[in-house]
View 1 (cartoon, helix red, strand yellow):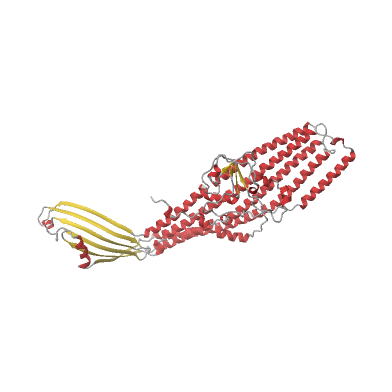
View 2 (spheres, one colour):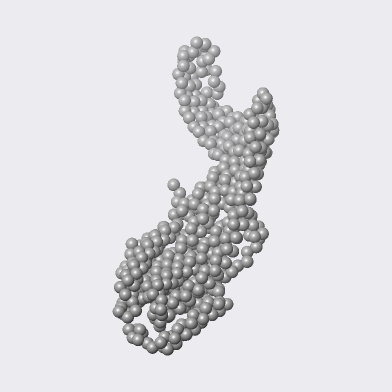
Length: 615
């Protein structure tokens, strides 16, 4: 390099011609390199929610002790090593079928580096997107809390249904009295009436689903009195009673009497859909954080490579001092290296922040390990161009959006209120029937009295009607009008949700399509920036200033380096933006869990009641 300035003029011309050829070849390379082919945004390895211990997909390394027993994918043995065997560092996905993997390897050089630790002697964990989603479903406190909301809502249904369960009754009591009498006809002579009365009752009461209530009970008792008129003395008495009351107008029918059960079922459906919506939002946050983590790791690696190229340039300029460079060029390069160092510090902080955020969202204890320094995503953001039909996406959203399920449940709830209030417009008319048999024996003979109640005499009975109607029925009419207004409001809210769903899906589809096109655009920008830097680097190494002030040449090369790194960062950002846009589309359609092969109906199923410890 130091003898470059002594070349004869013909050599300079030859090298100039070589530079033109290099430039032309680089330009041809930009036109001929294929666009990157990408994989579907949903990794093929995305698992369903595990129901039993699964084999972990990543390792936590560099720790002398063991974590708790491996019961979930994230809780893996810690072991001390610096690198994994080659078999464990292979890509999780094959190369794109339509892309030249070898040519893309040099362009997207950071992809393999992203899957390796970026800090020396770091403790790290490797995982793919499916694993991190599964562990979020298992460990996230938010999801565990939402599942308990579903349990509470479903238990409310049981509570309302229990209103029609039979109720067993038992009561017993003893009373002794001693009262003065002012009439000899009360006792037949003694001045005080002294009585000892013991009575017990056992029975059953039940409310029917048609609104009626029936009861049956058996009474036992003894009565001792000093009155001469009590015959036989020391009585034992028994009585069997059966009664029934049934509404005939207001309050009659299954619809009215099961209204609280239906309301609890609608509330449980609403709670379940709200919980699923919150779960999908959380899973979307986890997936977006996963790809932001990939983006931040790539950014750190790209800035480090930019610093390396700047340092190499500094060494070359320092070696050419006194030939064609001066101290000004060294100062300019040092300035740029310092600027790049500051960007690296910021990028490393952003990476650490994203790791902390992802660990918080997942909630697994293994990711909260104090010695864990790096979280390493193993999926590469290959995203093929997708053709998404807006009409199909809207239809899918109308079938799966939790907001629509919630709105329809609200609509059914107001329809129920209309039917209930219409029933309450009727007057109250109840039929009542009561019958009984009794037995009586002396000497406290309860057994004989019990036999006599069925063997002697005949049953007594009562039958009647109860009619009641408020004057004007203003309260009932007001309830009906309020229920009708609530129904109309619910219809309009459902219409608004449908319009909102269509708009969100429309925007999400458009964003996915734009993000897909941006990847191709950023790829072309990256190829042009890379070719420009290589041309300027080669020309500077071979020709020096070539008649141009060296300071300008150095500045052009520094700018080209920064431009290439920015193009690399923009390309990775476009990849992450594509996946995030696709996640938002799945969220808008309500199919994010289904896309991860997770059954929403099984996700929040509460534990069996028999498995819950009884108080």
